[in-house]
Length: 255
Ligand code: GLN
Figure 1 (cartoon, rainbow, N blue to C red):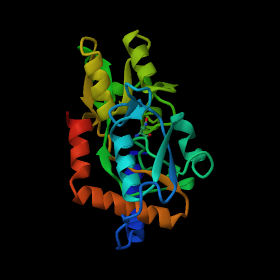
Figure 2: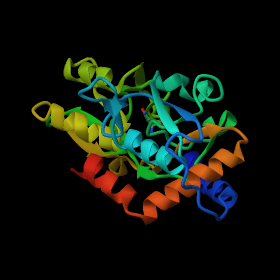
Figure 3: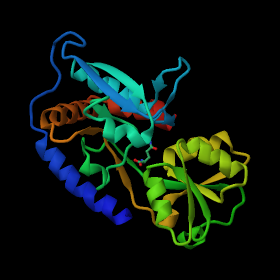
Figure 4: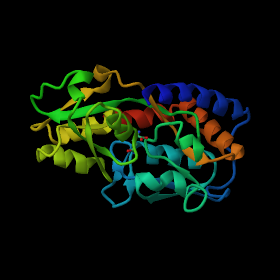
């Protein structure tokens, strides 16, 4: 699985970037002149997406897709839904999905991906003082993960592991705190957020200690819509070049 994610990333990046032509995606039209971009997310994955103080989805991904919408002169309408149903909702309920979603071979059967906008890795949350330290230590454990995520796929590949999958990663974290699990596998940045929320109970171990491969987040797009892919990739490039991307990383991820 790990190897597959990596190999496929290279092909995807090559394919998708070859689709991104030249020409700017921004124009001088009024905001929203190019219609509405319906975006799906799962607002339970801080710092990329969470429910903000006003009850609406907020986070790095939400700010990024709003900035992309501005470049495209499109209104952005974000819908919070189950992570599992994001890919299958593209083309009906939503146009695209942004949800800290890793490019995987399986997902490419249903959707296309934009250029990757963030490199991540899985991490392991363990009870404070745990002796879990290497890949071998994960064997035969009770492992929690979020349903339908790469954390769940990796956990399922571990020898002898009993995997429990939850709709929200935080529910797995709660079961870890209650002693029902030995550890939780979840993406590194959310793991750090949960780790600091429960700093008296949990430690976070970076997945490189377990030889987990890097993963690459991208926006999930309707299959075959190269026009939209080009526009979104061009907007992403502009946001990287004009410093917006870096300021969002500082604001949401590094602060
Ligand atoms: N990066 C993981 C995946 O794509 C988890 C994403 C999430 O839970 N929002 O499967």
